[in-house]
Amino acid sequence: MKNIAIIGAGTMGNGIAHTFAQFNYKVSLIDISDASLEKGMNTIARNLDRMVSKEKISETDKTQTLQNITTFTSIKEGVKNANLVVEAATENAVLKAKIFKELDDVCNENTILATNTSSISITQIAAATNRADKVIGMHFMNPVPIMKLVEIIRGYNTSNEVMETIVALSKKIGKIPVEVNDYPGFVANRILMPMINESIETLYNNVAGVEEIDTVMKLGMAHPMGPLQLADFIGLDVCLSIMNVLYDGFKNPKYAPCPLLVNMVMAGKLGVKSGEGFYDYSESRKAEKVAKMFI
Ligand SMILES: NC(=O)c1ccc[n+]([C@@H]2O[C@H](COP(=O)([O-])OP(=O)(O)OC[C@H]3O[C@@H](n4cnc5c(N)ncnc54)[C@H](O)[C@@H]3O)[C@@H](O)[C@H]2O)c1
Image (cartoon, rainbow, N blue to C red; front, side, top):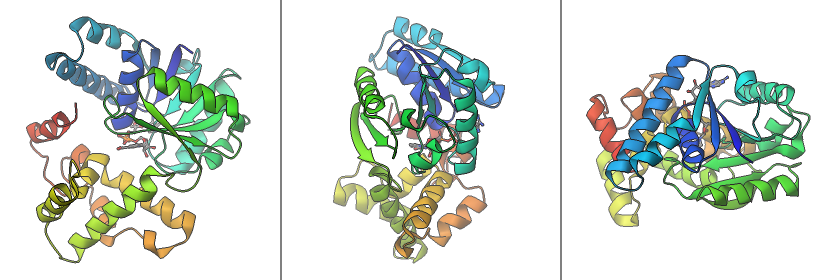
């Protein structure tokens, strides 16, 4: 396995591309517009610069990593030689089904199709293809270049062979894979998102302010960052769609998204990526400060 295609150059896609390229895989990074690709490549270059300045990698490693990535606006062109496609486009079940149908049509019959979805059923995504045995969840954590965990999700029809290949590949790029079964939210988000939603509910109920809630969780539970700041970092739109997947999937009111979260997403307050969420990131330096905490 040498050629990897990544669909989506956003928060996760550029991190996944960065990681595979750093381990010398040939990466095709695909997005819908040149502007998104340019933004993604600039983020990768900035993150590599930070790694060089912290002496985690050399200047030569940085150049080689960037040279390993080619960008495309066409899925058909970008996946031509791919042994594996990792889809990291917007969290939307209809969009993912459309992308997987196209991938099934244009990819080589042996190509494995992985999705980085945070919560959408792998089995449902696989149903859009005629190769459900080769569809798998590869759930990287944010920020991808430094977070060790990859949740590997076995869809209803995923073959053992594909599971073994993806577990081995994850280890080759320095990650620690954990195998889980395909139920809403898998493991990570089934536990994390209700905690984030509850912290938003705590704010909504006026129990305490943003900084107070985050401070309680940081100092009291030894979390590296508070849940509201983490929500900003993940993206409030992503948090909302994951809560909706849990709510729809389990039909249990305990997963109902907090009305404040719904309102903030409708108002375009999406966290770091939009410049404002529970915290204000309007000055670019502030957003950078948050990113620096990780890479
Ligand atoms: N943000 C996180 O912390 C996080 C963590 C783990 C998993 N995820 C999952 O990763 C996926 C991507 O999330 P993100 O936070 O990177 O989102 P994002 O909004 O930052 O990026 C999504 C990218 O997908 C592109 N895109 C949309 N439609 C496309 C198409 N048809 N073809 C190609 N590109 C397309 C968009 O232009 C955008 O650049 C989602 O499924 C999300 O649930 C997110």
